[in-house]
Amino acid sequence: MDKSEEEIKGWLEYRKSLLEQKSKSDDDFEKYITFIASGALGLTLTFLDKITPIDCAVYIWLVATGWVLLALTLLLNLYSHFLSSKYTNKSIDEIDDAIDYDSLRENLDGRNKIINKLNGWSIFLLFIGIMSILIYVILNSIR
Image (cartoon, rainbow, N blue to C red):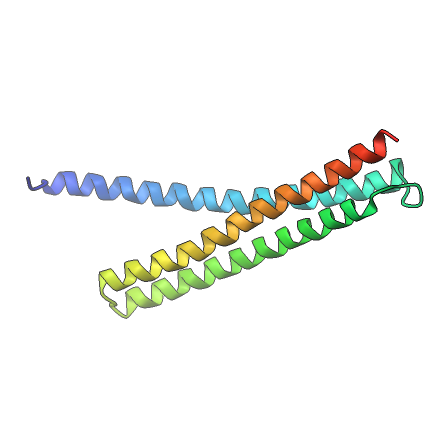
């Protein structure tokens, strides 16, 4: 059954709104990852300075691991943002060069997979980094 021109226009508008929503969500994701990772770094520095001085602390390797993972999270998130911007420009160029739709779709899917993997790694590193720091805090609080 063929769709009417009005139905197609409605679906295209809906698709456009979904893309705008996804773009906002992606921006929020990057902000939240950055906010959480940098906040966790700041809190642990305060914790070490005020509550458990480094010369009295045990399992320091846990907090060091957490810091490294949080720093990697921030760097990976920054790289993901850079790559996303670069890929957007590349996609615009392909559209301007009138690349065929199937090829463009395939290129976009491949680029999105890379960005999704980077974002997945950011979440994983953030989680492990925070867990390392929490374990360090718990072990140093109960002694």
